[in-house]
Amino acid sequence: MIDGVAVKQLKVIPDERGRLMEILRNDDDIFTGFGQVYLTTTYPRVVKAWHYHKKQDDHVSCVKGMIKLVLYDAREGSSTHGEINVFYIGDHNPQLVRVPRMVYHGWKCIGEEEALIINTPTMTYNYAEPDEFRVDPHVNDIPYRWERKDG
Image 1 (cartoon, rainbow, N blue to C red):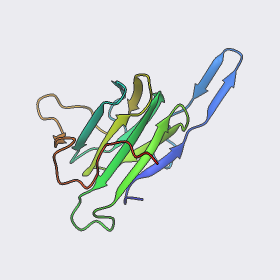
Image 2 (cartoon, one colour):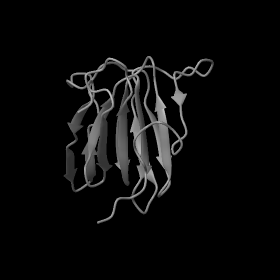
Image 3 (tube, one colour):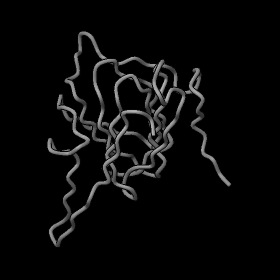
């Protein structure tokens, strides 16, 4: 596991009215701070990648559909420099993944329906000076390819 990454298995509590799933609590070991909560969606087979943050951690969960969340540690001096982590999260595996600052990350919707992703970053988004640094999802120095691996 990349240094600083943490995973929380989420518990779904169903009853005759529906279901409840806690995603992140301030008393969780995985919790490092609160900035905001937002929803983003991804259409089937679309890749939203790569980016990293210098100041904030992300807490990513897919609440509908399925995504392949991929992290790459390009941090010089990190004990896990060069490592890649892959998480399949969503309907069939409800998890929350903490993505530490300076770690590249992105995802691909791997289901046949739009995926709904909830992110709880540790800082609010600054429209004037975004803490977001991007590279092309397919043309870059990251040793990962988004193609499906059959077989």
